[in-house]
Length: 502
Image 1 (cartoon, rainbow, N blue to C red):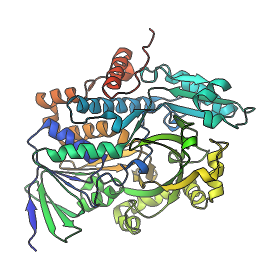
Image 2: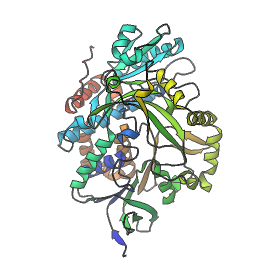
Image 3: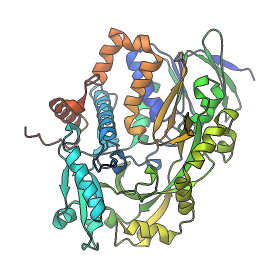
Image 4: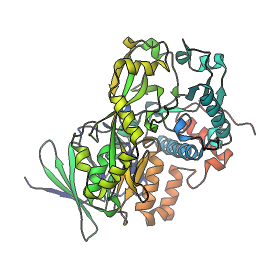
């Protein structure tokens, strides 16, 4: 069987939200680009982008308490929350642009209004939440946030959580009405359908990338195998993006670029309790995030999560973590051991040594019984009946481990783009809040890997069309923030924010 050789301008590895976003952006910026997309599974958005495999919160820092840590002096640091909220507003602008262009037809298929709430109990946590609210209220990005300790108000906001609750304990919650639920699986499929309809774009499912070589002509030779027929292919590309979720790390290491040396990964599996009782599901309409237990990692933040998946309302609680050596839900148990190399062994050992609480947390999670999981759920739904809930396996997350001059290696909770010095190849590593901030991440990647074109007047103008506030700070401009959020709300058919009284 003869090898098939192609010469696209761009190769995208992985048919998830990152590749879909980057592909659409690049075709908008340069319509004559030729792109090939390779996905090892038989369908797109089947791993981390799938609706059942991620939280779908539309991470905008409205409710995630781990984005607003308390400093040693008792003050609240909202700098990370400001950044993430601004990034999500860029995502909303890009999606609104695609709706206005007719590229995305019905926004309700992938995004809907769902209030975002934070809920805590106990004197210390209530004090923290109140200080957090007061600090966040100073930022334009969090205007409209409400705070309450009033039991009647809390019962109105979250009846399922308040029903049967011990109200002798101090309780408090914040609420942002302009929160959203995003089905990134649906969004990914629509973006890729659009890409496939364009000239010069081809997508190959059941195709696995096996190796890379970078030659003197500055082209990457990407070797691919058709898993169905055994047909071998080679794509010669000027630029390669590795957006394969948990599978990105092995591919980055296989590329051999110096910038990838020292990176490792720590895989974490996830589970949800999914409600099966329509009457219970109907009682809750919000994404309610709590506070992680002392010593627990950020990924453990519990939440009772209203979802809209394929037009149907759903209710999830979790996450419950577990340990596996797989990097993908449909990966191999050899993924972790095969990712250990001479250049990343020390960072991985050092990160493991300095993250004993994470190891302890994962062991406890793995050993949980169904009764333990129900006990955790009843902290948020006191009247929960085991008959109304079933366990659902979520997606894999591979946390980034990288070199650190002082500690040898550190475990990062977030996303990181690793690119070659010449910008010819880049890989996205890590997890949350990745999907929600895909637009900003890919925009940054474009500037890193296509610096001359990104600085050109033509690309600058197009970027401003796609993201009107590009180059401006919503966190520092209350009026621009209000106008932008109102505009995207109208186009995306979301609940419009109340005008701010100045």
